Image (cartoon, rainbow, N blue to C red; front, side, top):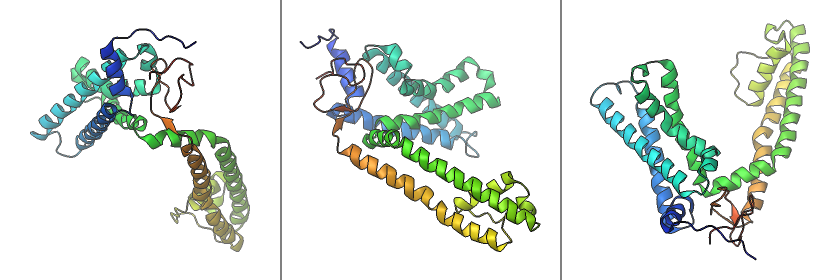
Length: 278
């Protein structure tokens, strides 16, 4: 026997569908509009750091735009709290916290109007950049990428551990060989570690170079190994993403716990087991 879901006002169901259901036409339109607003709001923050932005008329225009976006995101945050059945759970979720952090700095400036010049408050204003993180929930591929990272985490961990061992061994060899030849840049293993990381990432600043034959051969080998830093994790993630895409899912969110990524024919939430909206 199917579990009955509590009666909810029709307008709340409609708003929930628009705000949280990206598979509907209204939901897609809402998401597109919100993504545009997020990009524009971040652009305002970036432009406000330019030289001359504190002068009129630019200061007034940027200030007005910032408050317009702050009010817009505040309304969006409040609507999300209203339409969900458990507001406290959404408020404590990752994206709920990000939503709050994206509007908090402007209101801190209102409470402490004389503190805008303090470095602490100016640093808090950079929290508005967290709005960018909200884009992840609207990009369909983000879910597949996140799942691929999670599934392949052990393989990547093993690979990175192997890379760390190679770096430590190469650094030790270079310390022994190069310091014996009077190369002061390799007088310690930590100093050689700096060289190993720079060499493996193929940055090659040129401030630390080997002078012995063994050191130069080790450098060449480490450069070749460095290319695997890109090739191996990319191959692992590509395989997992391909496998993830074979499983057809939907962006429909559970009204109880806000979990997403359910199968299209799912009737119950995979996390909390509650009945999903049709």
